[in-house]
Image 1 (cartoon, rainbow, N blue to C red):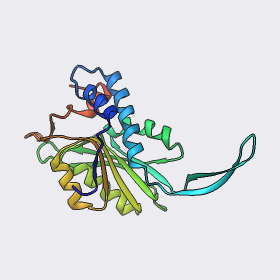
Image 2 (image 1 turned 45 degrees about the horizontal axis):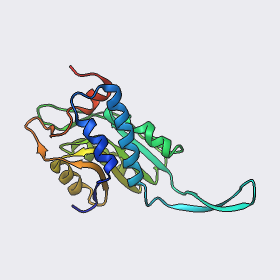
Image 3 (image 1 turned 135 degrees about the vertical axis):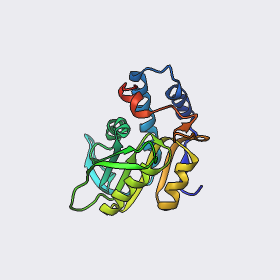
Amino acid sequence: MDRVFEIQHPLVQHHLCRLRDERTPPAEFRRLVRRLSILLAYEATQHLALEQVEVKTPLATAKAQVLAQRIGLVPILRAGLGMVDPILELIPDAEVWHLGFYRDEKTLRPVEYYKKLPADSAVDIALVLDPMLATGGSAVAALDAVNGWGARTTKLLSMIAAPEGLRAVREAYPDTDIHVCSIDSHLNERGFIVPGLGDAGDRTFNAQA
């Protein structure tokens, strides 16, 4: 599928195994989300624009490069919050803006309950963060918001994706890159990814009913 990048790196597969395991406790689950977020962000940011600068080292002046674009992290609440801090370790000057959706369990459609995007100029690159790309409803709604805001480039970063969600995003936003750690088999009748890992938000925040 065009513009869909599934990371095959051995470290990704290793950490993904523990992330899926139902026996993994919340504290370890959060650590695994951090590690995979860093690896996803590393892959998704390979083509960021740079500008030339000069810096003075203790010995001489050196030519160097720094990031040249405004970058925004846009986590989808609540599970996307776990991906923010590790990516900020890589891009400490990134802006962080939030979008909140919950899923109507009858229609499986997203319902927006929170949106925090500034009214003035948008970022150059928006990285939309959500660990699970299931039906694609929340992802498309988030991309609607950041594209309507005026972001020049959008990328979607998810740990696990279902083919149904990938198709939904591709159809709505064919120019958006999607970076995932795994493309799983399918969605079940409740709209959960199979084999997946369950509810990423519940497992991150130890809020399982």
